[in-house]
Image (cartoon, rainbow, N blue to C red; front, side, top):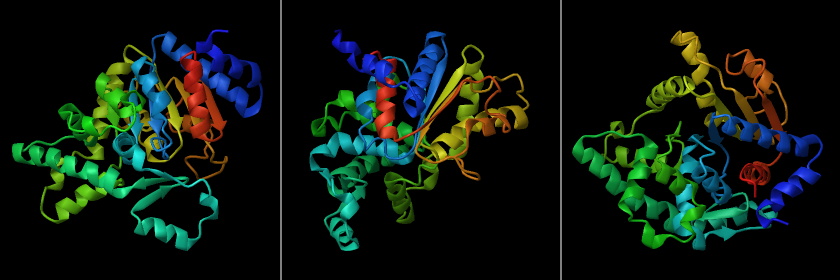
Length: 325
């Protein structure tokens, strides 16, 4: 058996019904989108970087299966945290049994818990802060402004982190994105550790908040990118989790149609969401794709897939099938 196709063959032989069949269908739809010359946006919510999704997502980026990513500020920074502090992370397999006192002990030891994984404050967050202050300071001195991810790209350009890499950089999706100069959208960046740290420095008078461009400026950039790209290629939407990482970019189409009167702009022509949110009413993450038709985000004939499962399990399997592993 060709070892490079072991996972794909297993999935095709055993994932035949229910959510399992949706995994296969969504992966085939994704491949069709790319093979026909389409583009794909991936949106990252949750704690996918701490779940080390970079091990498979970085390969997707390098193989040109991803063309733009919208992620939370946490996913942007946590990939870098893992890159430079992996050896200092602490896993807590029995996290369900922790008492409030146990949690306080982790806090006192400067560990911030994400489910079963604790991120070390000093080696990850403060380490990155030290370098980001230099990057922000340079922009301030030059009177320049950048988007949040552009500051991270500038940091990687310097190479200053390389001596501290604790994982194979091939497993970092942010490094892969940086190598490709992949467009990133990071709405609500201030709701992240680095965003909080930046705000603290602004309060102390170290920087002006204006040196970091806003979410509105991300939306303006995205509107122009979508308009230009959609002229030549259909654009798909692969959503991991819910929240702002998905809701922010998918809204660009109705804005283009309704507010800018660019009514000839195509809607998203592929949609898949992986979420463990149960179908519900009044919930973005639990809304079925058909609801998006009424908002002008998807068309009646847009291929639509919903996989109700844990994205940390499902997303790598879909990526493996797309990559023919």
